[in-house]
Length: 426
Picture 1 (spheres, rainbow, N blue to C red):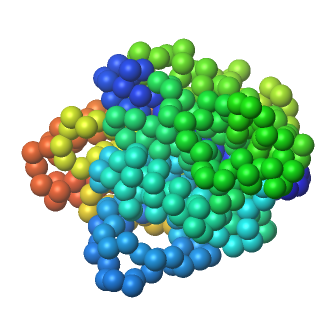
Picture 2: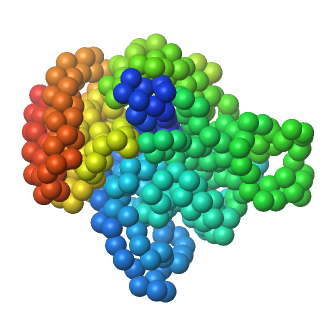
């Protein structure tokens, strides 16, 4: 079993979805905050579609597996030392995010990381149904394992939220086994098993595996009741955040749009979209979705609007660092991703990711600076949002070379705004 302690407190991330019936435009909205160790740089990466020869292999973080013949173009949020993605989207408009979960079945010392599986699912799938088959097949064959953290050994199990323009599923996996259910009109996952007796699919032998391990198996079979580890992991680690994200999405169902979902990612409960010190990760009242304290920090975020009615490459909104101290900028899933968006270093540098990280640290040092940050960034974010909508329409008619030109302009604008803001608040 996973033991409680500092490692469990470092776990973070919240992934959420709103299906077409819950959004004002009838599109699917996918969003995630990636919460990682403080100062772990996480820029964007674009891998181009590729053809692979027979017998080729994919070298993931800890294991090598057979490669498929063709892989799709993928855009992902990638910690600089990892092979896989925290979250991402591919050229087909398929989005995936993952979470650490704690189960009564420990992962292996070596296997696939949740981040490996996000990238593999995006590279090898064009829709949710294909991604479910890819991820469950890989989990069953290779299992999960290896540390997702560089500074200490901490293998963990993972859950996934998988979405395209027409549907979304939650997949939760202890070891080589898994359960899956179709998402509700608004839904989210955090750092706990959430699928109960409402599962839609189970891996073969899941009940037998539980019985062999001496776990209680009731009827109807409740996956969470059987596999969730509540003896060693505080419920407060995730229940407040999960409740907050689900409540905020449900309350706005029918009117959800990209700007509102961005605000959910910025949520600080009683202090709204502003960071205030003193949030206790072990408190039952800990609802902060935008993470600043404890051993986790939000290091990157993504909002994607998935719309099958549009042609051209997908366009998403990404941010670096804590979203309450940053701005979301448009990124096209196309060649020509600017160096400003992809550059990352282990140590503090002048890379754009680090500029936003330093802005967040300045706000955490003096929380009153948060008001100035939002006052200055909100108009820029609104401007970039409108430019993104215009570009998305243009991409339906213009070649991909336009995407590179557009993203270069956006990168220059974001870079200049961020550096100017950091110079003045520091």
